[in-house]
Length: 248
Image: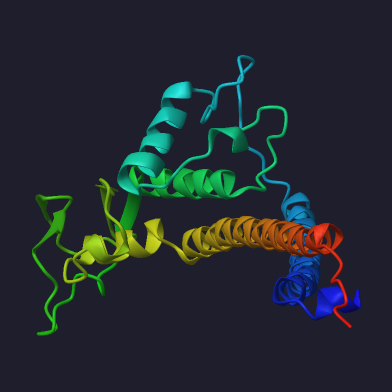
């Protein structure tokens, strides 16, 4: 050992072995934390008990139809450009507990919100302008409708198609659109989308952490192998080096 310590390559080998131990410790800690996160996410998913729907052929369905699921998947892949992992969509494990499944469920809620229809009832206050006068007509989904006189006690109604409008796509100056926005993109819809987004981000972060743990473990293997190789090389040189002949 003393000869190894006195040789540069030997010292480098010892240093690399020590570094490899640090990498292995880091990999172990990262892996342990990652597994704890996966366990917590799994428990959270099981508590919510949200499952995707599949038919007998293992195809995703929405309200019993594959066409609806295809439209939702198109929103997820084509409009949102989300990299879907097909392996996450397992009919034998329909529980929503992976990034793809969380994002698909988010797309499901968003799709039905974007393509839904709201039946609105406007009160006299809704149609009263800044001048204090009740409008004689109102815009109902692009069609001007006369306001009855006197104003009905139960209000006037309008059937409004959301037609792909997100929260910011509504014109709040139009009474019907202002009310339709609050009904379609309700606090519940926003809360569900936010919660599913957190689940997807959490799963993605855990996958990244698992990759980091694997990277640290791989670096530990490389540095350990290099350290052992350097020490072995020094020992081989010592064994083949001829003994010095004394000239005294």
